[in-house]
Amino acid sequence: MNDILLLKLGEIVLKGLNRRSFEQKLTANLRRRLIPLGQFRVYCMQSTIYVEPESPDADLDAALEAAKKVFGIVSVTRAAACEKDKDAIAQKAIEYLEPVMRTAKSFKVESKRSDKRFPMTSVQLSQYVGCALGEAYPDIPADMHNPELTVFLEVREHAAYVHAAALPGAGGMPVGSNGTAVTLLSGGIDSPVSSWMIARRGVRLIPVHFFSFPYTSELAKEKVLTLAKHLSGWCGRMTVEVVPFTEIQTQIREKCPEELFTLIMRRFMMRISERIALANGAGALVTGENLGQVASQTMEALRCTEAVCTLPILRPLIGMDKEEIVQMARKLGTFETSILPYEDCCTVFTPKHPRTKPRLSEVEEAEAVLDVEGLTEAALAGIERIRIELY
Ligand code: ATP
Ligand code: MG
Image (cartoon, rainbow, N blue to C red; front, side, top):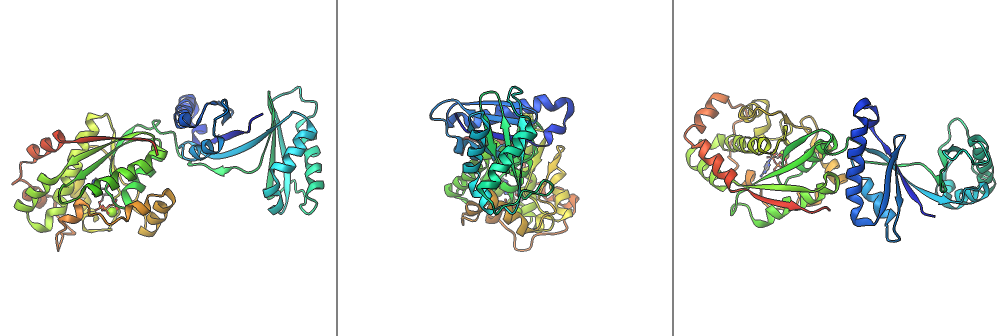
């Protein structure tokens, strides 16, 4: 008899008619994540996904870890299996829940019976197992109204299951349920976080990185690929589009006023990203921009950069404090990689005195000396596509 996982669905439950297609997306995403971990039976009933091991090598602990990273799941629980017999259930509860029963201040038992042939009602089973737990752990009082710990029992077709409180899942919506977006991924702290936040809303991501070899090194590129690999644990397989950016930066430096370097460079990034988005059926661009963080992220500067795009630009970090972003990066596990000291193309040509309140007309005028279309086309033609395997 095998332990199983119970995964609770999040807000997709609320989605009315779309619900079935959301559930299908979510179970498909989950199944794909479980392929390397053995054979599992995965099915959805009443806003819960059940994961049952089907082969001897199926690694349920690894499946639990993988499920925690599947968007659309709000909580994950490992439930212990036992015979469908009241004493076997009580004994299992006593053993399996020992670590949580030892520390709980109070408890209650709740039961669910999908096998209606089971000879006790749910209430009777709860009372019976509640008494057994009370005897085994006499210091922990039962509390029906406000228990610290709720013990769950479930009598199903082939077995009974015991579990305690669930662990938090990743939340959000299943990847692929809300379209595709191009995310601008630098090697910094911010953009992995902004990418994750948008993926969590159910968006499939196409990461784009602007690479200025030899001003930025192979190591800087590797760093970005490592960040993408981290994200793939949540987002699934991705292909990073690495755009050659050296020629554009060189031309800007030769021909444009220094105080507008960064802005003109960022306009190229947005333009190229939008072309990639449109070519791939993506509906938006994602950046890690944050109001006032640097000169190129004032309101005036954002206006100048987004003027070259028609697609919506999603900036999930716009109103966050750096400390909050850092905390999220630590939680996601991207922080340590992000702070590796490899230069980024933005820092290589940072002007000494960047304009913080640029006017769109003057940026357009300064840029007009460049062959914008030719440079954009050449960069697009030189893209290197790198497939990221799952983390
Ligand atoms: P991050 O914002 O990720 O910490 P950063 O601070 O070096 O990196 P900024 O100068 O703040 O980057 O750039 C703002 C946003 O522009 C980034 O969050 C990212 O979305 C995008 N961006 C910057 N540089 C690149 C790059 N080389 N390739 C792709 N996107 C980039
Ligand atoms: Mg930044």
